[in-house]
Every structure is written in structure tokens, then in C-alpha cells.
Image 1 (spheres, rainbow, N blue to C red):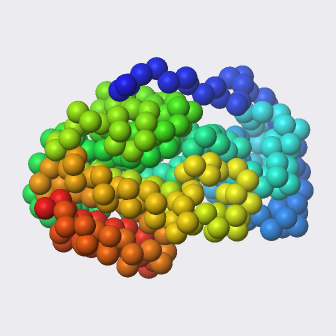
Image 2: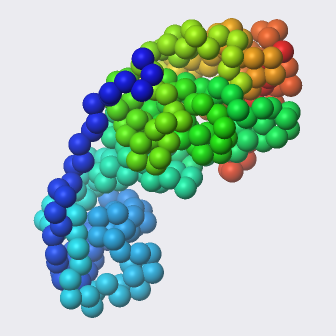
Length: 312
């Protein structure tokens, strides 16, 4: 049901703060840098951790000027900070899960291992949706859906960019929906986004023929490839959000086949996909008979990453 009270994840950090001297933290940082190099972890991740947990800015970290501060407010003790960093080095836990925060577009999103960490390339889905509205003079005062919402990033991005829309966000995971709902509430979009638990379109029967735009970042990695992913992804991110079946196209194929029942005429169909899948996805859309003006768009690295089409 929409906007039901999904359980809200608790913060992993206490509400009180610890105070340490700049010198003590600097000494820890120097050792942490050595450990990062030995473990082939980018130093930028250490800086990001300190920005989140110590409130230090990039300039203070680069110049190491924080060393002279009499005290620095930390969200946890230095020993706890070290244990957290060791988890990054030894267990390969992504730094976003360690801090519980991921930055995406202009948003600071809560993330847990129940949701995929939103990637920078996915930000372009919002820009493509906005361009589709402009190109076809689509009335933005309409229904848009985010299928497989995860952290709620896409739904929130759509709500921010398309001011008069109602966004409907669906995920099969209750744990993911709890995170997504919390993010929407924290960022002021709670009244604009409805959340539903279920598989793809299943909870949205009441929207058949009424949806102006569908956006999705579905699982698209072939099952055999999932097992070869870097340990940060393989060991810690939800496989439910990664595994797209034998050829990686199971979910995309389903969205191609089912979306025409829900999209209005000239409704937007927009998904993210894996490198190398563009031709297959374009063929699926063009051969279905319900879409036209099929387009493929590259990400910032020049990789064909997004497919867009319009309901006939």
C-alpha cells in the first residue's frame, strides 16, 4: 500500500560526540594512509570518511591544517574510527555503508546493505527524463514511476526535477523501502512520493494507462558475471539489485513487455543497462510494436548506458 509505515533503520552512530585533539587525529590519519596504500584503497575514501565523521573539509585535509586544532568533534572515538577503517581495508565494506551516507546529485542519502549504493552515472537518468519532458512537451503534472527504487534516489531525483508530478516508487524489499521512505522524508519529498512493496508494476494496477513516465535502474548483470564483481559489490551489495538472469536482460525484458499496459500514449520508457546491452535492448523495444523513437544514450564515460523509448 502507498506510504505505509515501513520500519525506519536506526543510525549506526550515537547522538553524542567524542572530542579529540587535532594532533591525535592527524597521527591516526598518517597510519591510516599507510594502511590504505598497502590495501590498494584510494586515499580519497579516507578523506571522505573524515569529512562525514569528523566534519573536516577537503582543504583542511589536503593541507593537514586540522593538526593544529585543539579539539575536533567526532561522531565516534578514534579507536572506533580505526575499527571502522579496518573493516574497509580487510572486509572491503564500501565506505558508504560504513558511514551510512551516499552523495547523489544534490542529495545526501542514507544507505544500508539493504540497498544498492547509487552510482554517479545513474544521475543522468533524471536529466534524460527532464529532456524527454521538454522535447515532447509532456505535461509534467502527471504520474511517474520508479520501479526498483532501492534507496529512493531516482524517485527523489524525479520529484525534485519534475515539480508537479506524483511519483510512485516500487521495490520488492521492505528493508529497501524503509530506507527510501526515510530519505524522501528527510529531503522534504515525503508528500510527493508514494511507496509500494511488490514486483515491478504489480502494486500499480490502478495506474494502468495513466503513467506518463517509467524510469528504472533494474538488475542487469548476467548471473555468471555477478560472481566476478569486485569484493565491495559481491560481498556487500544486495544481489537482488544486481542479478539480471542468464543474459542480464530478464528484468529489462519484463519491463519492455509489461509497460505498455501502464504508459499513456507518448509515455516515456527509460532504463539504465549494462555496457554491451544497448543493441539487444533496442531490438527488444523496436520488435515489441508498442514503442517508437527508440534512443540509446551514453554515460559520461562514453558507454552506452541508457535506453529511452515512447509508448505509441
